[in-house]
Image (tube, rainbow, N blue to C red; front, side, top):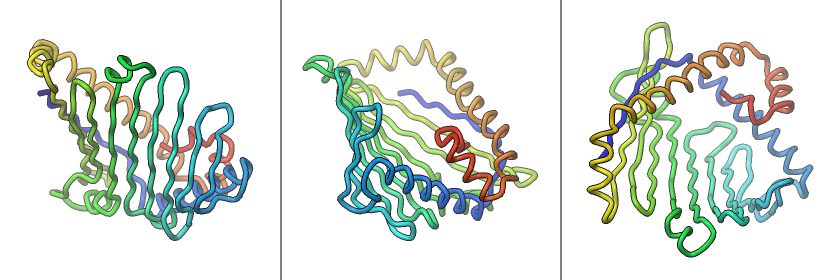
Length: 234
């Protein structure tokens, strides 16, 4: 079994700013999907441009739930997933699931993996204000040879910043479980350094971009999202 943990300090955003940004993203998504076909609503389906991906909406409401199913299949394999957000106008909970399997009988068995990610935003905001709050983000995955999960917890840091701790646990499965245990025993130092490096680099990018984004007006943030929707979020 492998246990990895690393803590970083992040620049904060307010809940009001976050809710406002979520609403702007909802408006952008509405406009984008409308350009692809019908205005987004329950039971509407879209084919993504330049990708063999289809998206089926189960719900699309600013002050209600957004829920969608999506799937993609090509010569490499197939993936299906779901996504749910309770309310883009005032986000509280979100969940994403995905299942992937490579093409071919043997490759499909070897590469089969599934996972779930759950976010409780009320717990997150509680954690930014006081110590001892449970993790706000939790994920699980299951693969042919391993399974495990991870959490992200937040606590207040000096200067109003956030102290964020990321924890990941991985267990071997089946006949490879002893092999996995021995591999981690000999490589755990390298794995821990790699894990810490990944989390630290994310924190550095976050701390570089967030102060700039916090100063933007709603119109400026909307313009940025319209221009570079995949790079606007920290």
